[in-house]
Image (cartoon, rainbow, N blue to C red):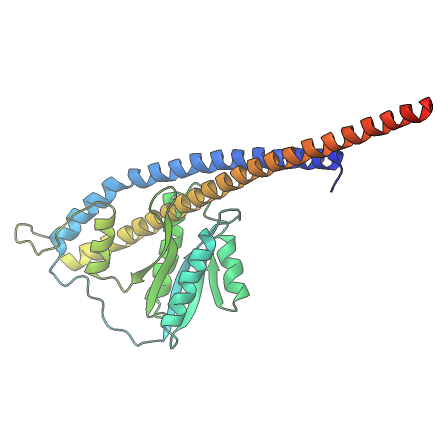
Amino acid sequence: MASWKEIKSRIKSVKNTGKITKAMELISTVKMKKAQESVQSSRPFALEASKILGILAGEGVFESSPAEPTGTSLVVLVSSNKGLCGAYNIGAFKETLALIRRHPETKFEFVTVGKRAREFVLRTGNALVADFSDHVKDSVSVSDARTVSRFVQSEYRSGKYDKVHMVYGHYVSAITQKPVCRTFYPVSRESVLDFLAEIGANVQMEASTQHEIEPSPTHVVTATLPLILDLMTFEHLLEAKASEHAARMVAMKNAKDSAHKKASALTLTYNKARQSAITKEITEIVSGVESMKE
């Protein structure tokens, strides 16, 4: 058994760790709430965009002209820049590997948002097209999302890829986050409807004869869809950040609780060791006194 002085030093170290993890838990809680508020603030634009799409539906404007298949897909993989967030990154990586296994005939190339994602792609030997880890910070801005979105749109329109997917952590609640793989391209009415329904915009996409659209429905959608894809990218990045901070909050709370339990166990061991040492000293003193009497 370690001496009581060594145990006392370990108790101090464990308590300091508990203080650090508690501070990190509080910081992650604040950042998670800010990400939630940012998600809510983007809702008005989504609702207005959904009205436009509801008017334009049925005109065939969502159908993209068939291109020559390339057998290559682009994956936008979103992760954290730092660790200590539980299984958040692992979930996204497993979802990515599952996507690759589902399509063994497809070649996958990657755009990463987050240093952990970049490390994962390089470690697994996949092709890294671009990395935006240094552009997207904890406070995701619309311009950050637009930079990622417009790059991805440009890559798809160049004809290099058949499909574009985004893998990120979807925020369900403070204790539940799930990895999601969403198809960005080719754009379909169903994918846009699913996204708008997910954020609370319940719109029926039916053709309307009550509006005169100038210069043409296709022209309006061509101008509108990039904005909606920017919004979708922004929403997904915010969801990923909220999931990351929620996962880190839970991980740090568990670490804090474990530190408290460990400190309590060490305190009990310390008290026993100290009591044993004191008893030993008293026994030695009594034995010395008794020997002097003799």
